[in-house]
Amino acid sequence: MARQASSRNISRTFVLTDEAAPEKILGFFSLTSCEVNIADVPLAYQKKYPPQHGLPAVRLARLAVAQKEQGKGYGEYLLTEAMVRTAVVAESVGIMGLYVDAKDENARRFYERYGFVVINPVKPMQLFLPIGTLQKLIGESFE
Image (cartoon, rainbow, N blue to C red; front, side, top):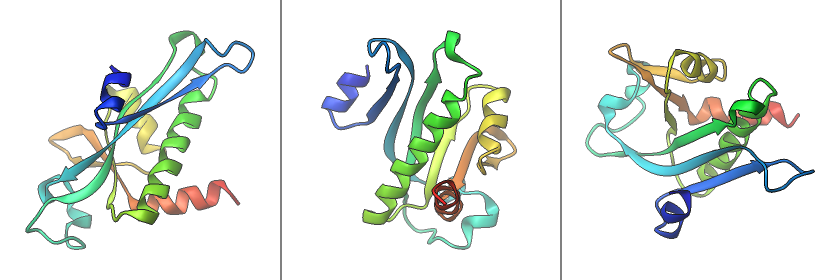
């Protein structure tokens, strides 16, 4: 699926492999661009953006760590890499942030630890990381 989406320029998937056994996939993430309706922006941020048209953002479409490799920090590494790549995009193209749909409560709490906020209490699994917060986190991780 990742190869098909990439060949159609729908998304890009990045794979983390074991250096000792490159054929062994430890985890991966996929990024895609998206257009966000102002209603899908947390209320605290809505006043910053024009309400009349879609807003550009990046969506973390998938992030997964192999079951046998969970608990080793690979999820944090992959999320950090996704954030770095999003920050690079933001330098060239205006975007407002990074969106993700958490698959469950554990995933939601994982993303919240990195500054993601719930968009709407009615949809608690949809989260948003404002570009300013993302850039600050990335800057801190390289200091």
